[in-house]
Image 1 (cartoon, rainbow, N blue to C red):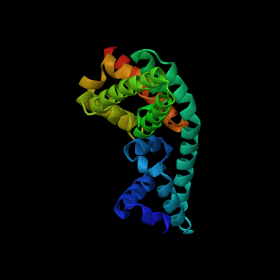
Image 2 (image 1 turned 120 degrees about the vertical axis):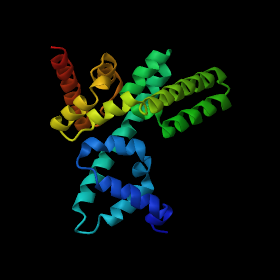
Image 3 (image 1 turned 90 degrees about the vertical axis):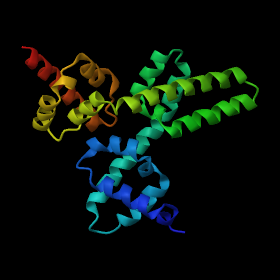
Image 4 (image 1 turned 180 degrees about the horizontal axis):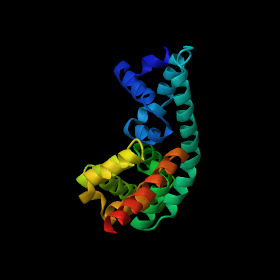
Length: 220
């Protein structure tokens, strides 16, 4: 059976179109978070078959981005797991999640639960219970962040962050100044939102600096 037939055709086509619509790497992390299918073996195999078309240069470039991101994620999982294991408070877990956003996704939770069950089966119930307690805390953090992004301020911050350029970000700021000209909005950009790949991190840093400047300008 060919790789693309293992995926629902509509799901594959939708994910493929969204991948092709990305103007640059900056939007890749958001796509992966919203459609984790794009990092699956099945999607990559099917997309690589499509990319064999000589006219599919744009798709080949975006697949290179995806493959690099997945390789980085594979390297990060052991370090993230060790950090979760070492965390003893909710604040420490929040810091882990800030550094490794992958700790808040379903795949990571499945890995931790599988390891917890292995410890339980080996008679190390205390270790297993500790891992499951951390899973509960991570689920709480994930719920908070997912629901927070649907608030008016969360939507305003992400509109500012994802604006195409600084001029567009300035327009967002003035249109939603009541939500963005606020210490909590600055704290969110500075401490909560992480950039993922290097290009996304650079974009985030530019927006952090711009918001600080705009808030200072408004209060001048």
